[in-house]
Length: 67
Image (cartoon, rainbow, N blue to C red):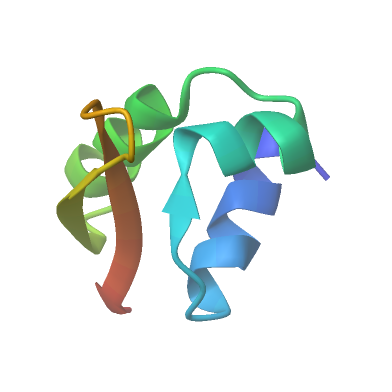
């Protein structure tokens, strides 16, 4: 199973995914590129929510809206 397939299965399981979680679980550092691919090439409806960390930085949380 490819890293993209692992990310797709994660999202299909209705689980949110962050870049840091993707690095730890799937050893993949380019989550935004995969999300872009899924949106443009496979027409997935993925919601992006911006969260603010305790240190004031922000990060994206991706969830699959519908398949």
